[in-house]
Each structure stands twice: as structure tokens, then as C-alpha cells.
Length: 522
View 1 (cartoon, rainbow, N blue to C red):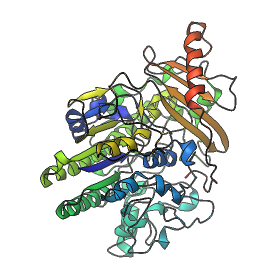
View 2: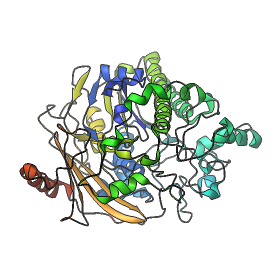
View 3: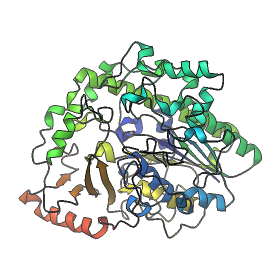
View 4: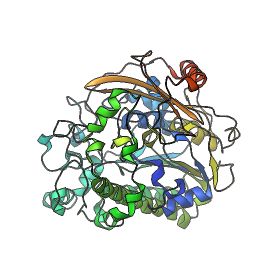
């Protein structure tokens, strides 16, 4: 059998039709769910990119692999715990396509790692791996048209100019420097008559065939065809860079949704009063307008409903573009006659606030818009009936043991997750899983160590630096929007005691590896 892991970046689970979205069109992901199994209560093990991706790769929590926050490079010896290494040892061809983000994009000083702006230009033209167990890679650096600092000027150094920008950046410059510069210009808001502002939303003028989403799908499809022609079993990780901000899909997809069509889906921001919640929540909602980190958090409270609707419409456009390209990959499997022999699993690294709780993008506030992620599986190894929904609390830490077990390979002792329900040896859905853990050692300007334990009904988040201070306890059945913090509520005293005991029992994992922070934000 073959295995394809497809990941997106910063995608809210509720953005998918199969997860209940009535507007955003995702026919291919919906098809995948209808033909396989959908996990309704999957949550990330870390709400930031680098730690979350390291967990998917290694099958370990951040306190074990050591990448406890963005800006910390995954050590090269993590190759020993890579899921790709295990498949490679079993005779599989292994490939990675898109954004890896196993090393920091913006380090304080050059680190020698290709996945950094400072060192991507040193990548040899003929280098295609090996990289963390993958014997063939086509990488895209960071993958977002972000203006992280004024010194970057009016384009993202992540995409070039060549020789910077890794494989995608050099591909953009394949027809010469002038053409490459023009493609970079077309990615910017000014090319569409817009400007960079707190909404970070515009129609990208880059041709769709040159867009990162198209390129990731193209390179993955070419590789799958090569492996199929050779009769080689394969494990591939296809890592799209969207729908991470800025919200800048190409014209076809930007224009797909009218902001008026999403207005009814906007969260009721007036309902969030931040009563009995940590003071940081309201402070974070105000953001960093006009400050150094405005690009990371312009403050969800600063958006008008019209601005938020425009941003959401563009976000949905990015997702429909992703779905289209995921469909191209699924169609390739059908055309090659290998769909029945290929396990396909789709998920994302973490979610997106998208205006909920007056918040935008991501941050150290563990609401389900950020923590809850889609996970869908179809193909060999799936034992649940087509269209089944698993409501057990599970996580992305479960991916490595699940993929290996589905392929009939041994699950290494270092894996800290377990085989997912709905797979052989994964337990009976509804009976085996009781909780899922999220770690977050936030570290930008200040440190905030958070731990969240989520059961089928309740969620507890605690700040480890103030164990006796205010915490968060939500009843997800009666208050799915997480507006009422039940911490300290006498009516929930028993639940609070039980959740605290559970977190202390399974959630306070010791830091097994202390790694140097080499960049500010990753």
C-alpha cells in the first residue's frame, strides 16, 4: 500500500463542508470524508507552526522533541524519530512537497539551515534531499506573502530572489531574473491596487499556475506518477501553505465568495465580554496596531464586520483553491488505478481564530477555533464504515503510529500517541479515548507556559507559572462558544477538581530536551 499525508496551514476545522460549513465549497474534502472516516474532536498538540509540525513528523509532544515554540530549530537527529525514516527502512520511497518549517525562517543569525531566509541561497541547485528521513524533497520557504519587518520592503524574501527561496523560489526565476521579479511583484497588494494594512486581504495578481498552492500539487502529482510507473510503494507528505494569512488567493478564488455571503457566519463578537477570564485575552484582542508585531496580531477587535467578512470570504477562497488542488491529487490516484491501495490522511498544523472572541490569526489563547483541527482518513487500514464520524478526543500526535500500523509496520516505542480509532488496533470509537493534550510554551516578548486538557465535554487550560491563579474551564456541551469560564464556579467544583487532577496526572510532562531559541517568531 501507499500513504499520502496532506496538510494545510492554519485551517479552522469549521471551514470545511463536511464539518458543517454551509458556504465554503470543499467538494473533494467532503468526498474524502464520505468515503472514509472523519475525526470530529481532533486537536493539535501545539497551536503554533514549528512545534505542531515537529509533532506530526516525530509522533512526540513538544516537551519531548524540544521544539517548544516557533524560533527553535528541530535538531537533525530528529531524523531518527521521523515517520519518513520508518517508511524508508521498510522499502518505501519517501517524498516531501511544500512547506516543512522544521527550521526557523527568520533566525537572529545565520544558522546554516536551508529553511531560513539567510541560508536558503546556499542550497545547491541539484539538492533534493535527504531531509529528515525524506529521500526526495521539493521545498517552499515559509510560503506566505508576509511583510514581517519594514526592512523587507514590498515583497517577501521567502519567495526569492533566486537563489533564495528554496525550490519554489528558484522555480519562479526559471525564465530569468526580470520575470522572477515580476512574479514577486504580482504577489503584492499594490499589484492589485490594494495596500498592506491590518486586514492583510487582497486579490493576488499572480497567475494561478504560478501560485504556491498549484506548485505544491504539481510537484506532488509528478512524483506520485513516477513512483506508480516504477511500481514503488511510497509515503508522501504534501504540505500546502494556505490558508495562513495574508488572505491573498488568486483572482478566481478571491472572487468566489462575496463578503455578504459570509456575514451570517461571523462570530457574535459582542457576546464575548472576557468576564472571569485571564486579562491577556482582552489585551490580545486589541493587538499591536502600528507596532512591530502588527503583522502577527493586528487585533481582532479592530476589525469592522465588513472588514472581517471580506477577510473571511478570501480565507474561504484560499480553502476552495486548496480543495481543488487536493482533488487533482485524488484524481491522479484514480487515474493511475492506485486509489484503493493508497491511504490518504488530511489534517492541518493548527486552526485560526477568524474573529471569534474578538481575536484574529493565532496566539496563546486556547479556544477551539485554534486548537480543533480537521482530520480525515480514507483507504487501506481504515476499518470504520464509509462516512463514519469519530467523536473521541484525538490528536495529530497520533498520526505516526496510525500511518505505520496501517501499513503493517511496527510502532516505535518513542511514539507518544496511539493508533486512531477507526483503524485496526485503534480501539473502538467512543470507548478508548478520554482526553487530548495541547502544550504551548509561548515565547514572544514574554513567556507563557500553557497546558490544555480536553475531554469529550470539558476543557481546562492552566498557566503553569501561576498554578493558583485564574484558569479556564469550559463546558463544551452547554457552551460550545467558550464564552463562560466556569473556573471557580461552585456548581462546577467537582468537574474542576477532576479536570485539575487529570491534567496533573497526564498533562504535566517534564521537558526532556532544552533547545536554544534561534529566532524570534520562526
